[in-house]
Image 1 (tube, rainbow, N blue to C red):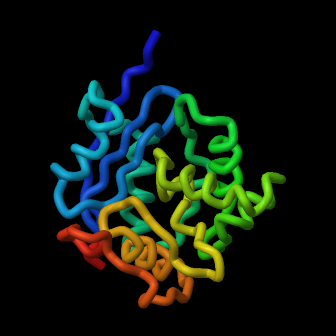
Image 2 (tube, helix red, strand yellow; image 1 turned 90 degrees about the vertical axis):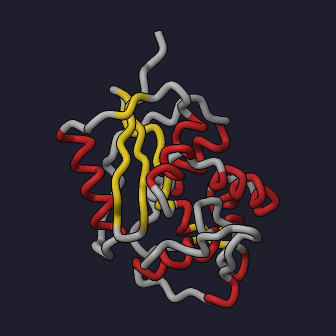
Length: 192
């Protein structure tokens, strides 16, 4: 029996977020977009049959934590229950490893691959896992950098500029010259 996904749209200091969940846990988080409609479209691409609803107490607490995170408060999402659905086994291992990165703690794609026993040649696979992360922020893919500490890519609205903003919220010094918006995007970054 398929599990129904519910979702909620809400505004943070950085823009509009869509959060999806089912009875097993959080299944989707769309990072801040310029409009509620854009956040909703992003979530519905993954879960086209999701039903918009008001969250109960447990999910409401997560909504509050996301709002506080984008207001600059130190928030730990490590205990949030997740339901990521079927994932490639290597991606599952990457997500479990990256989820343990704490506030302001960064690593590189190659270091994650090496820590998982896959070797630095799997850095690109780690990057693919981060690009497909269904719950960014909860699995903090923004804390994974390219070689040499460069910002690397980011698939959220605003691209690497948004990644830089999130890292700066956590007190990480970022080379903003390396952070650029994706070509053709109108929203260059979260509205901090």
